[in-house]
Image 1 (cartoon, rainbow, N blue to C red):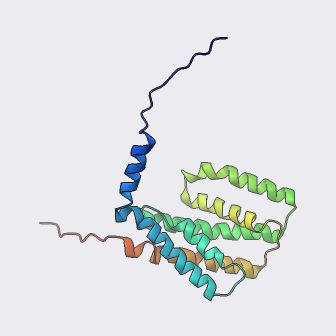
Image 2: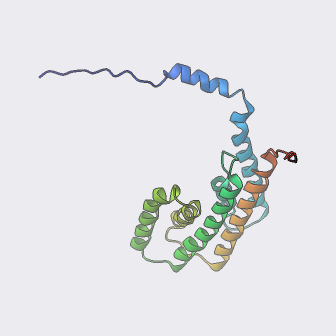
Image 3: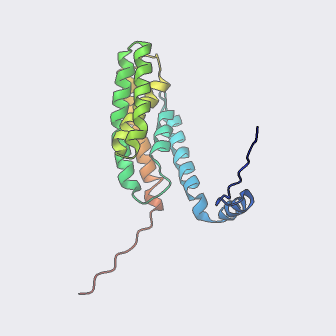
Length: 184
């Protein structure tokens, strides 16, 4: 038996230069900006969740983590789409859990939603959020009954999380370029 070893030249940089490049990038504010924005948003969400006593205040932070984006370009539109899809998804997921179907039906629903995710992610962000949110709701509340009060809390938490992501994580960080009047 003869074994042939073929070595292929890789165009990938060696790990050491890649590590050095990453290490140098840590000196720039731009590298830390998303972490700072997300940390600030999550701190506000956590504080609001603590102040507003309800069964699952963490839903505010979950929504913030979902809605806040790394890139600010198009973030307002994308956050709006995410808010709309997340709110609709909260209703769909909560109503599904409220109905309390059999465990096998829930497993099938989770499988179908998980299968739809990759297809919807690149096609429609609103539909992607509409798919992801019930998936999260079903996974968090699997087998537990949901009341109308809980659905209301989730919708309020979703609205609060979206507002925090926009007001704290987007608006203060956007550099507004002053448009110069066009010469006539």
